[in-house]
Amino acid sequence: MVKQADVYMLNGLYQQRNMMNQNLRNELKSIAEKLDGNISELFTSNSIGRTSRKIVIEYDIKEKNDRN
Image (cartoon, rainbow, N blue to C red; front, side, top):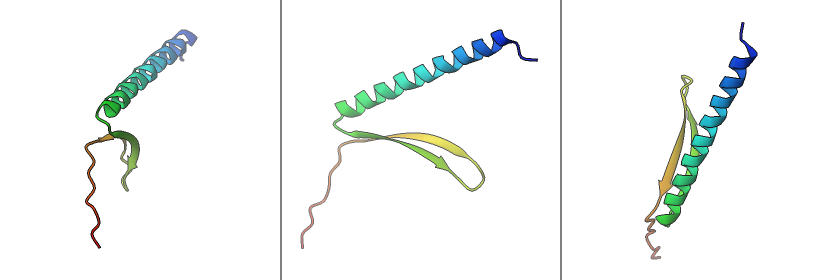
């Protein structure tokens, strides 16, 4: 049987982890801005049930001019 105190402790740990993750995301957003780039967060899954999240920072973007 799970005690109420254990539930409160787990909720507190979950909130701490979420705050840490949000702080890290904010730092990455700041890094992307300093690089004059952009950031995106992706959720991936495959046919065997594996899921993951990815954070991509794209910077130094160059596009080739079209010459028609």
